[in-house]
Length: 317
Image (cartoon, rainbow, N blue to C red; front, top):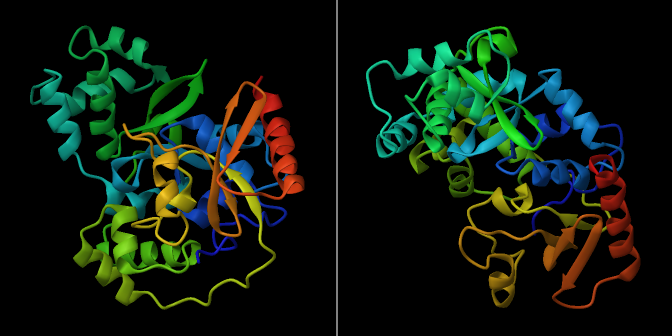
């Protein structure tokens, strides 16, 4: 069974937002509200504003990370994560599909961003003067990010912003030159937060080829698993690391319930974790939280979690 303690789901006291990100290495953040709720699941005291403060302070950064997906990562970890997870292949392909071509794409992106602070997609469209529109702008920013020139700034009225990495972080992101060192760091960090796990799990989570994942695994020593504590019940958000951090969900999600969690179309529903297993799904509409259990759940802990989600979300209303 996966370790809730390795994933910080036992909610150890005193953790800042940056501590949670550093421990997990990366928190999937394609959907910012879900990412915020991943912090809540791991801390009884963090608030959305505390996460926002860490983002504004450049302690955590939203950028393209493992699997080419948007994640929060710790600013100190950007160089070695960038070395292992950055590839411009997908961005270039998508740009061609959007009709955004030319041999000046990086200067184009940098010129639109430099010295401007965080910009929305609409603002970038204006600055790009027709060279890229809609998703073409997003893929152009992804291309710049893969070359260390851009990251995502804090959201503005619910919309993502993009900012020159040099302006936001003080300098562009320079990849770690020693790939072997980066691979070892990745494996050490992954194994600390994912127990039990295998090299195949590391490859699936990181997006690395299996051969490199196995190499990384060999260079990192096995770590003692955290001491198991009392079973916990958590309402985890969609795309939570507890489900996304391994190759599969065997052992935590019964096959007969899989379609309720993964209904299709790339949708992953928020889940109820109890005793290390997915034992229900949940949803919210405003402050109203609805839980749909797969079997009987302890009423007290469920209500405690619902109350804590309302506490957390009250700041966003």
